Image 1 (tube, rainbow, N blue to C red):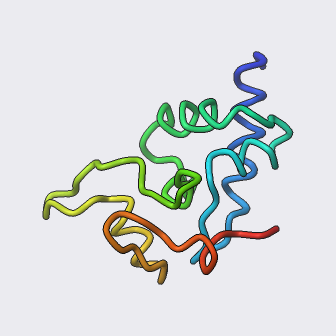
Image 2: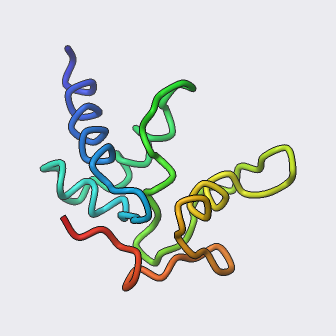
Length: 105
């Protein structure tokens, strides 16, 4: 396994632990994975995941609580927003209230 694969595995293991109905920031995931100051790496790893992975990537948002991805589904709705709403996370104008929904392991 290459170092990049090992880092990706550390990141994905943390993302897998985020409970349903909660969110974490890219920086929080990086810190919990033992990679402080590597929030962009978290974004890169999640962005490069292949379809079919059962990693709840949509629970990772930016440090201001904003949805970073704007990929739309066939109905024109942001996929990340739709997935969060399905789990009971309130998204208002593309933003999540971190005081209420941030994961605190």
